[in-house]
Length: 298
Image (tube, rainbow, N blue to C red):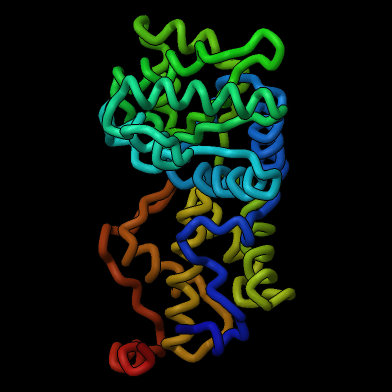
């Protein structure tokens, strides 16, 4: 809606994970390197954790792009609210296994045959599971059993990446999953941005959208965005997107603290030191906000 007003070629703060907009912070580079190394080196089990909105799915999208570029076969389980039979059926579908996909026995035989053929040709196969903290115990047990598929020469036949919120690590600490936990070779935990990263992240996304020298968010406002978002990329995106929309409605190309206050009130955000009442809209001295102006631009 506001792209032409600011000169963007596309929305810089879309909430959908997009590898093209990846901000290569040191930790995101390290996380991606761990994922790629784990697959290439046939480490078997790799775990990626992080709080909601820290960029786990974006990391997985980048890994998918890499695997496709390297012509590495993989299955991607994006819906973790499934039972064990549905889990195996989704793997069979993604890997295009020639079998009755509703039969566990046939899927396992076909999968083993497929993985052995891949290994014989010097190739590996990956299994990516997003939102893995939601997996039921029986599905996690099936994942552990898939780790038994290995070859003396090539090692693990399938490389499994489990990505989820910190609850995943707590779930893996359960006594009944100790065998799976012992097989996890690589772990990486994504942390929220530091303040410098938040500023660079915003500038990076705006540059990739077509505005290399951003002047919409002044330095003091960038610090406030970091404080209120607590360095969570998803919240940063939502705050900046809404701030740009409000700027567009008010026909101004510079965001202010008053605009950020309004955005945070609308988003019902809470942050350390924040003392506004939930839902309270700040008033601007000498300025009125005309909702019809916003509506006319939608």
